[in-house]
Amino acid sequence: MKLIAHGADAASAGDAKVLKIENDTELAALATGGAFGGVERIELDFPKFTDGRAFSQAVLLRRRFGFAGDIRATGDVLIDQLVQMARSGFTSAVLAEGVDAAAAERQFARYSAFYQGDALQPRPHFARNDSTQEAA
Image (tube, rainbow, N blue to C red; front, side, top):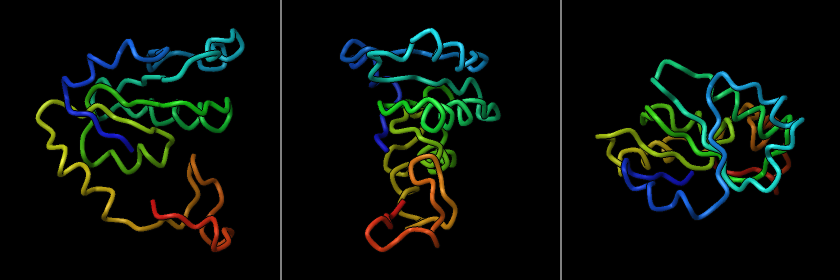
């Protein structure tokens, strides 16, 4: 997962076709209307750390709607949420103000693999063969 320091994201906003989705947006309506066509990055917001609707949106975007581009977490993104964000389908995150990027990177070294499947690797560990086993 690509981690971006707070405030460092402003310059990259014009680099790609970006769609910002609010937490209460119905994704099925967007998909039916063709809103994902040509989109390279979707930004999902965490208005506060206790609001986890963006986790569900990321899983839906990957599994149900087949979005293959960058899904970016924005807002109140804390260190303890990063591993679950990656497992839910996020590929980048803008860290909340005051969050140490080095400490955030260390979160991914804590676990080498997961038994359960996730948005990126849907099969559980026991159902994978040696060639598809990856460190999380």
